[in-house]
Length: 356
Image 1 (cartoon, rainbow, N blue to C red):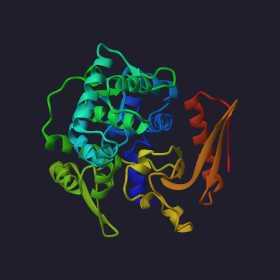
Image 2: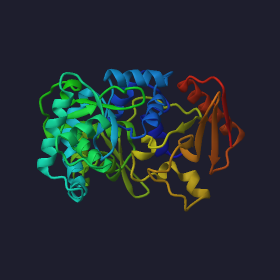
Image 3: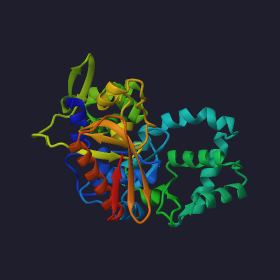
Image 4: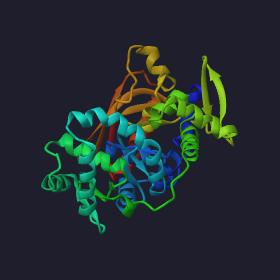
């Protein structure tokens, strides 16, 4: 395995799990979570013995929140980080959504009116679903005829720090007032916030490039460069195949035992980078035209390298169907089956079948 893939495995706590879901989100800073069920499994990959119910309780209590931050998609964040991360990254997301909002006829005054209605609807600790809020917006005369309109209005309210995730109601998601779920804190200096985000990214995703960080954070390459420069000696730089990589130096010996993971779609090991070639060397060696992008789906990872895809079927047992893109040895297949057993424990299912 190359040093970049090994470093990323270790730094993302895929070799040395943490203890809690909140600990994982704190370390990674933000975890992409538009596929909520998959995102819960992504957290559990990085914490010993964590179950689906454990993550659900952390989310319901507000210890972990979910909102649009960094890029225009949902991420898990901690309450202590939600405010300053939005202050840092929301302006770029708003700008990226301007054209779409205008095409839907949504103006600045329409967003302000929507935000006022949402504040009244959620005041006093109330939580409401998207559908309930859509009804209230339409009653208030807001331009919310279609799902696209509602989605844009709610995203803007998230970016404006008016609303954020509430606990789930059954399988439905709810929204709550931002200030009732996120502790009040003074505004951070932008450079201070940028350095914090920079250090967290390279501590848990490094070795990575400036372009990787800019992609993940939604910031510009100029901001990424500024953040790395301001981080100073906290980061080390090295050159590999003509590219500059940064990382936080390891303080101890790294585990060398062989390992396999069943990573979900949008896992940070894949989606956290613009260039995924370092973790796809085995795959690209046998299938050079295979695309390895953020939409690659559930992936089988052996010793840090993407070697296939997988899907699950739930019934009385958990059936994990493998689609291997790279030939695996018998010992590697054994490690993949052990990963499937871990997935079963996460879901609370004892009967697990795993086969190509």
